[in-house]
Amino acid sequence: MKFVWEGINKNFDEEAKLDKVFENDKWTKKQQKKLESLFCNTTKIYKNNFSEYCLPVVVACLDKKIVSILDFGGGVGEEYFKIKSSIQNKKIKYYLLENKEILKILREKEFHKKFNLLTNIKKNEKKDIIHFGSSFHYIENWKSTLKNCMRYKPKYIIFADLFCGDIDYTFSTNQIYYDKKIPIWIFKENDIINFLKKYDYIVSYKSNFISEFMKYHKDILPMNNFPKNLRIEYPKQLIFRTRKA
Image (tube, rainbow, N blue to C red; front, top):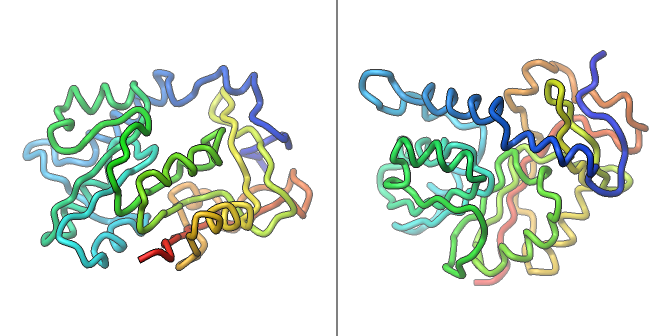
C-alpha cells in the first residue's frame, strides 16, 4: 500500500513548510485548469452545480435575503458559482480568502468584480457563515485563526473534508504531494468541539465526508502506517452554530 502521509509530529515540520506547495507552479496551474473546467468554453456559463460541500444547503436554509460568507481557503471560488446557480432568491456577499497566487489568477479573469478577494482576516464586518472546505487542517495556527474568525460573529461555522476523528490526540503529519511535502493536522475531534464551545458554538451536524480523493481509496483512508489510536477512517463534515440569538 502506498501511504499518503508520513510522520507523527507535535508541530508543523519546518522543512516541509519550505516546500510551499500551495504557492508553486504545479499547484497554481492545477487551480487554473480547474477554473477553466468549471465553465463551458464558448458561453462561459457555469456548467455544474453539484457540490460535495454542504455550504449551498446551509445558505438556502438561512431565513435571510442577503447572506454573507467567508470562504477560508476557498480555491478558485467554485462554491460561489455553485451557490449562485442553485439558489435564486438570495443575494450572496461572498468573500474568498486565498493566497496571492490564486487571487492573481482570479483577478486576471476579472472575478474580483463578482466577489471579494482577501489574503487575510482584517475586517470586523459580520458574516453569516464561515466555511473551511478542505482547508482547515492545512492551517498551522488553527486556534488563533478560529479566534480571529470570532470577530465576524458568524451564525454558522462549517468544516468540510476535515481530517479529524476519535483519536487519542491531535498531531501533525506530512502529506506527500508528488516530490513535495505538505504539513497538515490530524485532529482529535473533541479538540475542535471544545475550543469552539468556549465561544458558545455547538455541533448541529456531523457526518463522514466522501471526497474526490476517496474515489481512489474505496475502503478507508490509507493510514496503516500510523498506530491504531491515531488513525481516522474518513474525513468529517461538521457544522457548528452559535447558541446566541
